[in-house]
Length: 335
Image 1: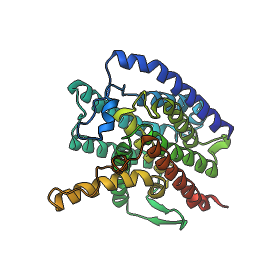
Image 2: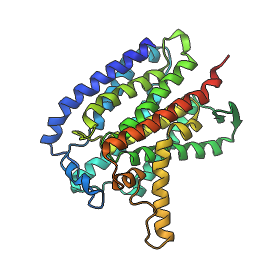
Image 3: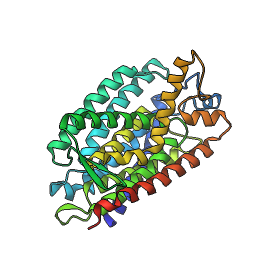
Image 4: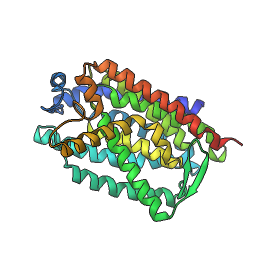
């Protein structure tokens, strides 16, 4: 537990300090947000807010993984480096997207097909890497029921790639209001840290690498939230959103319980589902909208919710599902 607290504290301090340093630099570089013209009118005031803020918590998580997590790495526990690898690569995709938006001076970067192909290839490579490292089996653990269902390797590979890509895009869609993706993800990171304590650590270590990564992830997001709460002084950009989705998906697979994302990532799921419903209904009804705007947090905004209310309600829902998820897998570790 002390190791996880240290990981959280160091990441919090690193993210906070790097955000202070990054803000004036991003302003000087004119790395600022270009707002969608078809979005909520209230968002037009955000024009000019610095983006690429995700680099602050990415730096914090990486720093902790290689410092606090060093004893684990030395003893052969690479479960902090595996999620860092996947999340960092997704962060690079997001960074490329952000740079394209800055270069073109509008809110469109890489095309949807370009991002999807890159995300899919990376997801497949990650699953094969984790399988080769011995941290994953093709046996699908069912939370709450506490049973395991074996799957053929090709079926599991396809399932895993789908889950990772869906989770990354769900997290990305959630990043649409001040502090929203950050607040929703914090309980998820804390839940993974708590779950890692249930499983113990190999070789007499005080905490597993996955636990250290989860605690650092929570600490980095907490530090960033100081600058991301409404009115946001700093946006995470695609860089941060893709890193968040990659981290959450990777931790679920490193801990060998991807189905926990159904409850643990519930808000991501609802955000993505609302987008699918909106697009599908628009096509089926020849131009009618199911929601006022998708993803669903924009629907609530246009219904009169403030960004403060969005943050606290969505984060509260995430907290509730994180607690539920923790008890859903706790039986797995009972002796």
